[in-house]
Image (cartoon, rainbow, N blue to C red):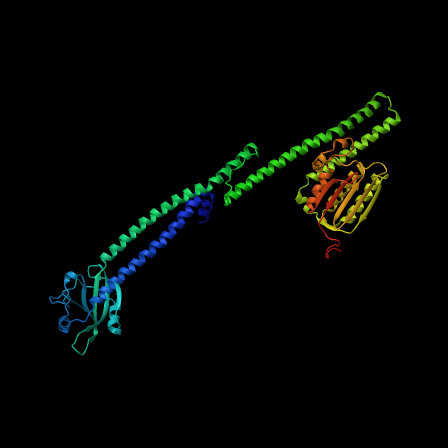
Length: 484
């Protein structure tokens, strides 16, 4: 059985669906056919039983007494109840000792059984059964206690004798056999038709699956993610949803690949500048050592400072790339309830070190959010770094936190209106800021961190001068009760 199940599972889906449909139809047709056959059999037997009970009627006492007195083993010449032999009925009397008295009008002799003797012994109303005659032919038998007419005193019962009336079953069995053959043929045709219909339905229903399979094989073979499976707009079945999901998946993969290629290209472009500058400076220092011509001390210090700055920029760029390469699942594992106020204060300490000549003021209210602590602090640091970087010497930066809204306002040149839509793009840098250190990934990382925390960030020109960055994060002014 297990081998058959395993072999069935290895068959194609079309074959399995066709077999299942054929099996279901075969079971239904078989159940209906068997039920129909038994119903017809019951009806035919009821009709035979009615005929037998109609034939069982009070007989003339003189004829019964004469038959009882003679009680021959062979049919007598005397009539019995006015019935003739060509009526195909079996008429005979059965005594308690098993002796059969057969009428000349009987179509033959029926074999008496113990149930017939029980009718004589117990005086039952009678029984209906199947039996055989002396030639082995099947008959339907009615056995009743013998009652004969006796004038006005009513029927007389002979306690030691039963009347046995039977009718042949040949025509009934022939009818049932023909019916069984017809039902078998109809069932076979129905099963074959159901199998063919199931195969046709399976082919039509699985045609979109074939297209999906061809598309998947095409993607695996050619690595082409631009393929799409046509889907009707009003279709809403499982195959249509699967096709739409596949199209969405390939579109997402194509977009992800495009972003990945763009990231690699942009990263290569951004890495080329500091690496070229770093290589040039190192070559100058190395050539000075090889030729024995020392570089002036001031120039040497400038070269070393440039090398250090370029290495810092490379480290920052690599860190930003690592941050962008992390998946949402990796970030989700580290999410916890953190104090936004503490994150801003920590970022402010670093910002004051980077811009000691600036005046940085802050007004912070408590606010707790669900985020990754390190990513949240890095996002705030990036926002403050931009404010410090673009603020003029001796300028000021105002930082505020109230009701989950963090604002950072500087008094620098501001961002032109036509450049505002691009500030969150990866590696995008304003033409006026390309001479400044940075990778162009800071605000992109900030936007991603804020969105993952369920918040939003906007950058706009401030009234007067400078830039205003607004970060809104969902949370509460107090930590949850479960926190210590």
